[in-house]
Amino acid sequence: MTQPLLTVRDLRVGIQAMTVVRGLSFDVTAGEMLAVVGESGAGKSITAQTVLGLLPAGTRISGSIRFDGQELAGAPQQAYQRLRGRRMAFVPQHAMSVLSPVHTVGEQLALAVQSVQRLDRKAANERAVAALDRVGIADAGRRARSYPHEFSGGMRQRAVIAMAIVNNPDLVIADEPTTALDPTVQARILDMLDELREQSKMAVMLVTHDLTVAAAHADRILVMYAGRHVESGPIGRVLAHPRAPYTAGLIASLPPREATGGKLPAISGAPPAPEALPPGCAFAPRCPAAVDACAEHEPQPQQIGSGHLASCHRVNELPRRTTELYA
Image 1: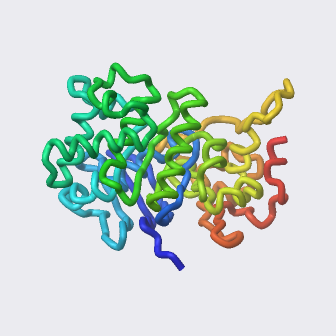
Image 2: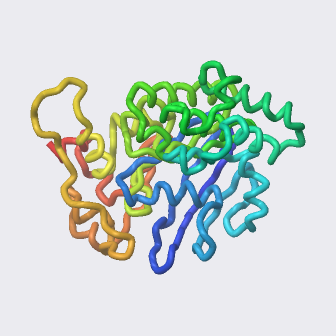
């Protein structure tokens, strides 16, 4: 059996008086894409930033984060700095948050290369142009001399992905990398990530709120709610046979392929704030299948099938088509 590249076990993250990630466990294997989905406030981005060591000083972290066998939870920043940009890379949602407006795109990519490898300026520039070409930017040599404001939104996002992959990392963590882009550009960028995974066995952890994106590109899925695991497993199995009511609600609320004019099902209410979690299962106040036990104890992940886990007290009692709960 292939050993995971990234192994996270019982991860807990506290910021000030709040616990925002609560006992989360998951794996990412070389060459695969894991989609991490859930509503805003689920803890997806905090989880991604914790893995990368990007949270501010004073953040409380416990549990285990092992990257290629190296324990990172509680490690000094020097340990992360040896990995970030080399073996682990980050693609943020907003490209302009990482691109400098006063340096050309090529200069910034070349600096990313030189921060990791001992190359002269000419060799670093060549690597930068090659990375832009690899992500599908036409006439990459000329465009490398452009400033970020001279790029379209889609091109800037491609440039950020180029910066992430320029040193051939083993793992790319992408936090909503295509949310602000139109569907055509979004599809091209995600197809490009698929090609890179196939070519280099690069693993991708994709944070997204879009189940349709996850369904089209991910190998496995992790559904989160209120900082905890809800359901995980092979993407096709989880979407076809969700066993947690929250997962079923997300799926039921997807618009149909053909417009019907009817009202879409929706999950009532809103996710709780981290400082105001209800007792028991955090989803119980919104769950159409909740019983008394749900308000008393937090459910633990239970194995449903090969690699398929669901955290629900009633996982063996619910109808096979759990999406019917929202009909």
